[in-house]
Length: 257
Image (cartoon, rainbow, N blue to C red; front, side, top):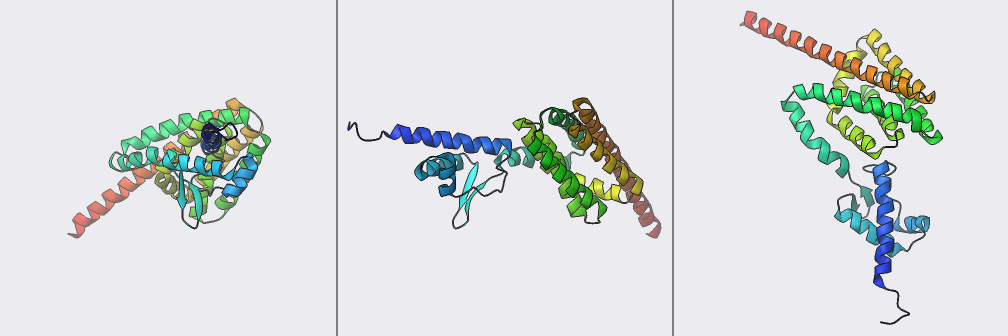
């Protein structure tokens, strides 16, 4: 072999390193589903490697389903880590209402731990993101746009999950929110119609936010668990009210017939 010729394995090792770096960013949430990757040129300059190495790394992650390249648009992060968990559970939740209770119980454990870890591990950058998410949610709650309320509520809880600096918590939280998004929407609509309960919900979010800022893991975990307990009660109340309305309509139908 010509000693002056660069061996191919070196290029493969560099591309593997680039692939591992991009995979890490996907896992930690700095590259989120739907996000467009920087250009090959920009990534190569940032990582100090050649464009062919970046290209090979992207092809490697695309083959594993983490990235997808769209002609003329660029390369994007897929939702593989979330969709494979969420899709079957969403389908079962529709046919098995009792799963809602179990999902909320799991959410209570997950978010309690996430808030406690966030209070202990959040960096200054995490707290800046938390403040921005909290302020956006407060602004949405003050208005009447329910879509904005739902989106900012979900974003607030996801920022906390990511501030826990545990990749499994971050991705499980995102997947769980995807599974129960419809139930969150239904519950917020129920609470918004009841000013006192709506105010309680805002107070609970404020308590979680404050405890994380105070670096108090015990208070943060307790506030998060209490919040989900409140959500569970509210959703049960909503279900009871719907059943009463359905029963009343059935009785009205019998009378009218």
